[in-house]
Length: 235
View 1: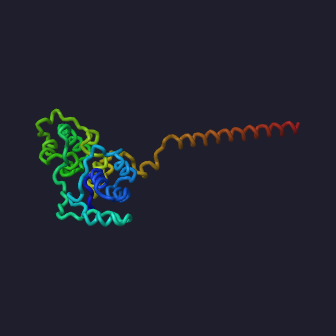
View 2: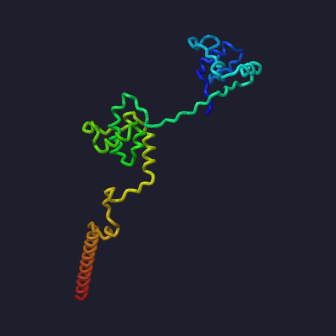
């Protein structure tokens, strides 16, 4: 784990007042801009900040400062801590501000209704509650169950949309896809729709019949005219 400097601006004030380090060296060590360090030296910035001795806090040694004062190109290095404190890992449910704790039952009810795939442990992580409370809301034995209203925990500010999506994605992995009956599908099989008559075939048959009659009538008319012409020629 990388070490970070405590109170960098206060440390910069102390280094400006008590060392011969360059502005660039102080800026690099304190993660500040060189112009900001110059403003501190000119009294234009950090006027109300009391300098913090990095030697007293164990973050810088006198030898390191002396080495940097002799070599302008030398970059100050923060001292290794004598005692390493292990990084604490957050356990248990997410912390919820007091002002929002009254909204947790509504958020739990929303999650139970809209994301039944979520486990109790996942809901507990999202809204910062206990498994017993979730069980009471599921079974409608919560003391205030009659007055609960489902409310989105993201809208309430109890969790982020990203956290909710991640938990839903985890819970959805490995679940079978919903069947057609579950989706309420009413599509008929192809074999049942191949022979359906929507009237188009009947219209085509009628059209063919009408055309045939018209052609037959036309032929009869032509034949009658031809016979009449032959009779006129004989006379």
